Amino acid sequence: MKWKVCGMREMENTQEVAKLKPDYMGFIWAEASPRYVGEDFVIPLEMLRETIPVGVFVNRAVDSIIDLSRKAGFTWVQLHGEEKDEEILALKKAGLTVIKAISVSDPQDVKDLSLTPDFYLFDTKKGQQTGGTGQRFDWDILAAYTVGKPFILAGGLSKENLEEAIELSKKYSIHALDFNSKVEIKAGLKDVQEVREISEILAEH
Image (cartoon, rainbow, N blue to C red; front, side, top):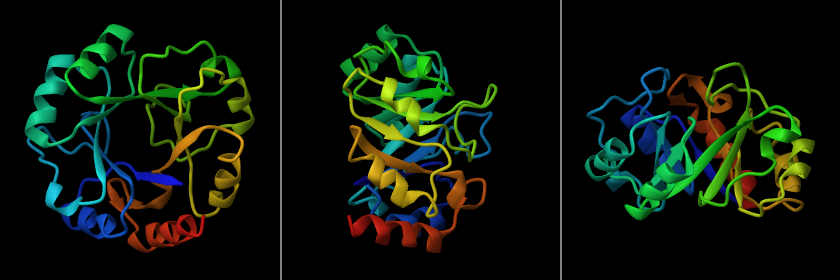
C-alpha cells in the first residue's frame, strides 16, 4: 500500500519523515493554508531519494504552477480548487502528473467525474476548507465512484483507523493513503514517531 504525508514545511522535520520512505510527500503553495511553504521554497530533493514530492495548489494559474515546478523541483501536482479539464490537460502537456482533489460529503460528489486527471484524491468536505480538516468522510460513499481512475484516500487518516483503510483498499482502487493533520504536533510539523508507527503497520501489508 502506497502512502503520502502531506503538508510538510520544516526542513529538519521533512528530513526525519523522509527517512521513513513515504511514497509521496506534499508541499503546499496556498497562502491561506497554515502549511504554506512560501514562494521561494525549494523542495530538498537530496532528502527525498525514494519519495515523490507533490506540489499542492488551490486555483493557481497554470503558467505559475509550471514555472514553480521547474524552480521548486516537483513533477506531480495536487489541485484543490475549481480547476477545469483544459487546465489539467495543460499541466499534463507540460509533463506534470495531476492529482485532482475532490471534497466529499455525499455520493453525488464522486459521481460522473472526468477521466482527465491521472489520479483523484478524496478528502472531507468542510465548508470552504480545502483539505487538512482532520475529519474523515463516510467511506460508504466510495461505492458511488465508478470512473475507474485510481484514487488517493485522505481525510482524518491516522494510526487508529489505518487497518480499516487498508481493508477498504481490497474493495476499491485506492492508490495511496494520505496523512496530514492527524499526524501533526502543530500545522506543518509532523510527529515523527506517529509517522514511523504508521510506516511499520503499512510495511506489514
